[in-house]
Length: 362
Image (cartoon, rainbow, N blue to C red; front, top):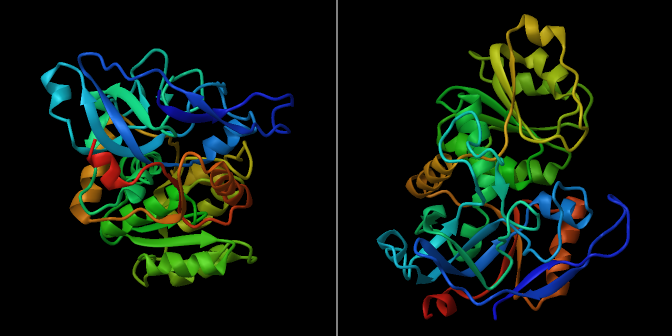
């Protein structure tokens, strides 16, 4: 029987508890007509996985494999021609279900069901195999390793929707600020916006992270711990365009108030997270400048396909901060969670579940 890793229930209040990891046994894969069995080669962490261990995420449950991000090889299929065409291919897995192609949001009345660790979806990628509908796969970009490919799905999809769908400003000559550089979504947003030709600026409290972002194509970086950082940012902008067109933000806090000072009339602030505070002030100055503040989550199945195709065509590589090997390596996997707790990572944290050549031989 295949093995996976889930969280084990222990006593404790949400926010105070920290559920330990445990191995669980999954049923032997029996794919239905349009399903495939993916032998997982690598799986990646997201902040939601840390929140699950702290019981701070909706639908937290036990006995369901963790993680939504995964790459692997299709080792068995159901009887349909759609499923059988995937046999032997290296793939990346769409990290959620219930959202086909509507630009506004999920079509399913039950909402969007993300893989990993909740009551909403029985599947997760931190295991030896996943049995999933063939329609949820995309071919692994050929220039990526399994570890790099596993780092792509959730953060790539979230960044794609924020930058390409919601902001509408990923164009040559436009100025975009991406806050909190170092996290997986922010880094993918940087890569997408740079590849689309925009002038991209980043913020961080770490000079080291700012320098790394510049090496990835950022036109400039600003330390948000410095008083009046927004004025210094404006000085960095091109002489003929001294205002931002968009801000891609995952922190919340005072970004709307600051943004109103440095975004052009009609500009956009896209918010995909609020790690600083669950509330943000909405100011009259934003209204008077016709600035749009848009919430953004993950994305549709179509956006996932568009994102993977863009990564392939532009030969983009997700940034991997660190990886560990093996499902038996609970100490190593726990250490990735510690990186996330401390915020020390620059890029994605990945578990290499099996070697690529091992998976491809099955």
